[in-house]
Amino acid sequence: MSELVARHRGLLALTARETHRVLKLWTQTILAPVISSLLFIVVFGLSLGGRIKQIEGVPYDQFIVPGLIAMAMAQAAYSNNASSTFQARFDRYIHDVLSAPMRTWEINLGLSLGGAVRALAIGLALGAVAVPITGVPVREPLALAAAVLALLLAFCALGVVVGIYAESFDHHMAVNNVAILPLAFLGGVFYSVDLLPSPWQEISHLNPIFYLVQAVRYGFLGTADVSYWLALGVTLACGAACAAWSAWLFATGKRLKP
Image 1 (cartoon, rainbow, N blue to C red):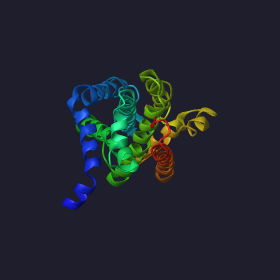
Image 2: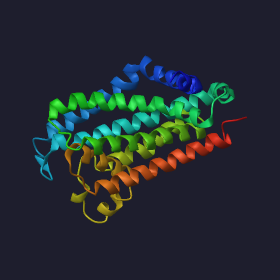
Image 3: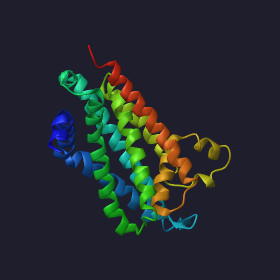
């Protein structure tokens, strides 16, 4: 065990640094997203729940919880890794890491794990509060765990990729504000896409975040707008593509090495 730790000392140190960065600013990195999502639950779930009783047999306040947790975790994983990677490039700290006796996959993984810790902390905190408030069940815990892992793979890797390409903080914020957030809202967080008329229902199926929301929703409620395996497969495929892109950038040193 000690030999394994010594062999990956650089990875452990980089992971500890990224995790410390998240925990040191926990009021911004964890508490603020949790409060924002809880406000969505209160405003949309408890308020509109009096008017929208159920969607497909599920109470509305329970229906929106899985999507809100998925959206909060995805944004956290992406934003954390994009800002951390960009800051490392901007401060030229990344050059010290690249020159360390570490494999490229260790550097890539170390930079990614900070976002995973932040996203998991937000997801657990939201679940701990939302479950007793709304009574939302967790009917398929193993399916939920697989969906969360696929979520982390996709958005942690995407954050690192965008952080490498970004030329300013505005660039990685634009990806979140222009792409991730709108696609999340249009991915069935607050409604079932089966209720949409054509062609909007078909267009919704082109949204990759739709499948992420459905995979997480199935883990909680045991039901979704599409097959769980299709939703998980699409999410894993997107995650694998982002991870491969990130691995290629570190292997070639593109936009990382002077």
